[in-house]
Image (cartoon, rainbow, N blue to C red; front, side, top):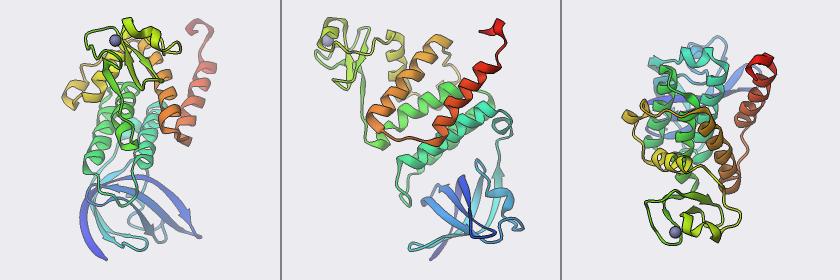
Length: 256
Ligand SMILES: [Zn+2]
């Protein structure tokens, strides 16, 4: 056992026995860990073991069993995200993806910072759908998927209006579209954006604006890509889909 102080983000908690809880925290210094919290309702830790709460946690790490939270300071919450059901659904999905992408106890400070930064930008009011798309593109490598969106898979030209091909796991230029009769038929701007999303830095994010058509096309494509290459089914993802269907029902006829 060792005690460390580390930044951490609560991914979720679950009931354990009668009144205890297990809390999954993505820590900056020790990867994702499961913590045991006794009497979770009357515990001083209650406010900081809720999903989407960040803090400096002082923790005792146990390599063989459950770990424990000793104390905390510098709590970070996301009130704007929590007030918007749609934004919250996307933020929850981003956290679930980071949970699925790496093994527990594996240190990944870069991914930790990326998740927190994505949440901070959602909190600031940047487009959460676009932020989620960027997150999904960048985290693909953690799932062992490396795709090339910037040069034709056949002739390696880089200055063309590309389309994506699942057959080639890469893009094709107009001269080689015919190599894959089942190419994706994406708008060239979508492929351009996917390539930008791979490299984009936080400072540039506020300048990315997408119209609804492109956003919808990228959403559908991303879902197809995750089905094909990653193959995980997350509850939080299904929830986003059901929210969308529900949103449609709520719209007045003039909005449709
Ligand atoms: Zn080509």
